[in-house]
Image 1 (spheres, rainbow over the protein chains, first blue to last red):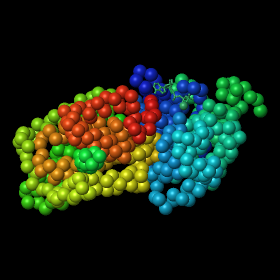
Image 2: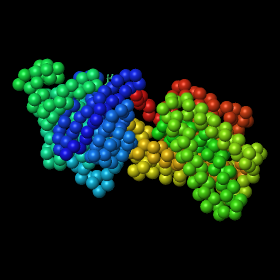
Image 3: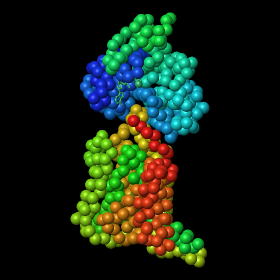
Image 4: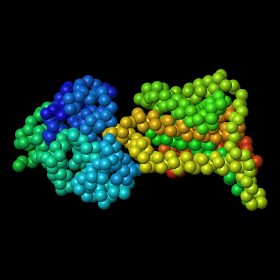
Length: 239
Length: 292
Ligand SMILES: Nc1ncnc2c1ncn2[C@@H]1O[C@H](COP(=O)(O)OP(=O)(O)OP(=O)(O)O)[C@@H](O)[C@H]1O
Ligand SMILES: [Mg+2]
């Protein structure tokens, strides 16, 4: 079943074109990789899906409903959450308060259970539970941003470069756990990444963006072995 | 020494009123990074409306609730219909709108009521308590100070521990992140305008009950001092605004006490200029993180 579909989505920053005519589809239960170099349009696409950016034209359909004109908080209530580029943690709040805010749209009865789940994923956050978010390291803030997005109990989780600032070892373990959430809880993931290799190994399908346009879409295993993709996004690593 | 203590106590009562107005300036600046220069008028309107309802023989408490609701809704309406459309037009347009609204409300009240001061027929309990040999404390002042403190504590608890309060703080810290966790941004802005206006109404009614006189320009006069208090305390900081109000009230009282009353009104401007130039985040304020 199609959970999210973008139809010819265009976003402009004043005279600058952010993305043009992006169409993509995410099925329920999938892990989708959104690949592209700096400035390819990954963040623009994700922020338009969550409503932080307004499209110039095009359509966003989530669970069968066009959502492109709904405010961001309504989209979150419908089951869409995001760990954004730049982390956007609440700086003068503790780790705990950040997570509580992540569950803003949820009933409080889930709170402690869901927080435990996040701490299971990121034990580091539990050690820092009473620290101000602004005092966390970059990697810890990244964990907090992902954890906070998970607190929304969403059906579709948008992750914007989750590997940024996180050691490859930790990232492998986070990807492993996200994969488990996908397999066990049916969480659908749309993940923007520049480091294509590890993400393609866990994703089902991928879209490749260049200059704000989709230039290729294929099953992840195909992209992993595509010579052009290998050259551009996998640093020419051969496996 | 006794004089000094006496002036200090007098200043706390004057400052309480500034504090109550300053809270609104501060909260609104926190969530929208906008100075609502019409905010002082809520203080004036609150006092006028209270008297209006009270003169209709409506009981005191109900008159208060009605004036608070009325002014609160006016504040929300002003934001929704007059400030919000200008949100994307830079900082200057909402500022001009606020100054315009402020002038409009002052003149409106002059037309409806009178340009002259009106008598405010409700009073706080009279009486004086003598403390030691020389210190005299008006009971009124104790009430004003106590009400201000209690309200500030209640408000502080609301901001700290309730879901709405946390949402207000979240919007102040990072509006986009607040939207991403599902906080209804516009509703939070409305609530903030409402609460700020209600605090100003409490200030206006207490001022009336204390001096038994209200006039159309009381909002300009005290509003500016309160704005200085908010800047002094660090805009966006609840306790900063309240302490800033006390500070300005006490300074004024000291200036008057030591025969320097001609500098009284200039002080607020001086504080404004110095702080805006050298410490815009105020005494308690955290450095604003620059956001793109
Ligand atoms: N705030 C902005 N103002 C103007 N142009 C912008 C803005 N943000 C992005 N752009 C432009 O839009 C295009 C897409 O940028 P976007 O941030 O979506 O890329 P990205 O794929 O997320 O890149 P990165 O991997 O560096 O995060 C780029 O050409 C960029 O210059
Ligand atoms: Mg990006």
